[in-house]
Length: 243
Image (tube, rainbow, N blue to C red; front, side, top):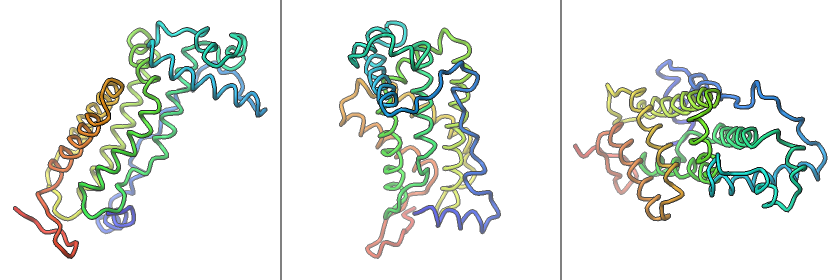
């Protein structure tokens, strides 16, 4: 299965391409009183170091207990250097979450070419989680911060609307493939799976790698069984229905 096959499948049925159906990525930094982006190489490097340190600090302490002083200390920079780039730890958290959404927006939301749909789905989920896990500390702090900050809670809702739309459009594409089930509530399923995957990310820091892989396998199985009838690959790589 590949992107070209899916696009041709959509074109034959008069359906819009996947990009047209996905909601615009929320800009988490819109309306924030941001400091100018650095342009000098040394300043860009300091800003990057602060972000990396914040991921560790947020991951270890959460949002409320994380401190600007400790973030700066992790980088061996003075506290004043922090405030040359960010006005607060809240603004730094927003920058990290916005970086995560940017990486997810660049993720090719089509399964890689594979012998079967299930394998392609598994590869797609693995790629998505490889991005998510890099920002695990930020997401832990984000979950805590949205509980007491109405503005962040609103942005949180926008994030879930966006990620749900991406999942729903992926499911819409997959439903055009041979042996897909008809009559599936794709939007309802997308909302459920989006919640499940974010929940899994929240737990990922406490899960051994083997258990995380097991959970991803389970999510793959749930999606596949909901969208497709049982299939097996014949010796010639042709997909045959087993029902």
